[in-house]
Amino acid sequence: MLTAVRLPSGQRVEASKSLPKSAEYRCPVCAWPVIVKPGRVVVAHFAHQPGGPQCGAEGESIRHMRAKILLAERFRDLGYEVMLEEQHTGGQRRVDVAVTIQGRKGPVRVAVEIQDSAISVDQIQRRNRADKRAGFFATVWVFTTNRLSRARGSLPGAELRLPEEMRYLTNRWRLPIALLDVERRQLTHVSTAEIVRDGGSYFNEYGDEEWAPDRRLVSTRQVKVAAATFELEAVRGRYATDRNPDYTAGFKAALVPDRPWRLTATRDGTDTTIDLTSCPTDDAGREKVQRLVAAGYTVILDHLPTERRWHRVRRPEPDDHGYRWKPE
Ligand SMILES: [Zn+2]
Image 1 (cartoon, rainbow, N blue to C red):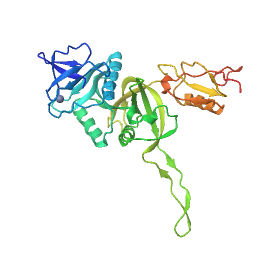
Image 2 (tube, helix red, strand yellow):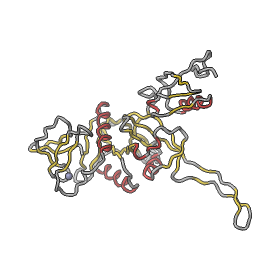
Image 3 (cartoon, rainbow, N blue to C red):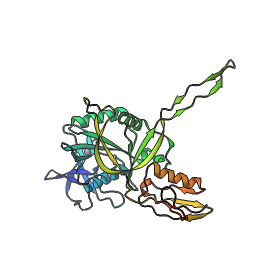
Image 4 (spheres, helix red, strand yellow):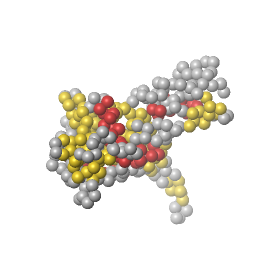
């Protein structure tokens, strides 16, 4: 855990290298003595001293802690008021990162919850309700790439099996899934589309030809990955009407990547380098990749869209989009 109560002042402190190791700290959940671990190898955090009670604040993964720190840093850069591991009043639940943002009618509080491991739909629903009761405008779920590792670097249109909790969230809100890459410090939106497989003919046990109906796949979806910013915004929910204020919060999509893309296109064993700092991370960008592939290039997608740098190749006449391509 990243926060503790420092004695004798009772002040809530965040773990850091600069905190004195000799001071007395307590777990904010079970009040058992904890020690600060400066984290030369991992991250600065608090750990329970041995012999304590079973405590919910213990035993989270390093990646989970790093994800919390990363989100808190980015939110603070955006000027949001941030509280790490905020305890629900009178409850055992703690919000990973509690954020206060400026809504249209004044400040609103958003609970940002990070999932590094599997969670049931039931738990998500209970958590959302508890956060609402505790005064939060909405709960935003962020999954680490640990939960959907194959989405990283997947081509648009790729088919991926989505964990049940992600299917629930995207079905419920019709919003992309927020995926956090802690190593690369990037946030991505994963949009999904349902897949319907055409039915085919088959022969039944009597030798008669029959047609199987079209089949809607349940857990496998088509996915599209696009860059997101760390900026939070209120979003209309799926069931929002004039009478039903079905609102939630989500991350703003990045229209232009904050960093140029990097992409390696190889043909006949030669690499070509182009620099395109404002290449869109949407369908238009995807078409460009596909054109490179169609032109015989091997395109290596080893980074998320925000990190890809386009290879612009020389050609006498610019194409419809104003780009010059290498002669065939
Ligand atoms: Zn504890």
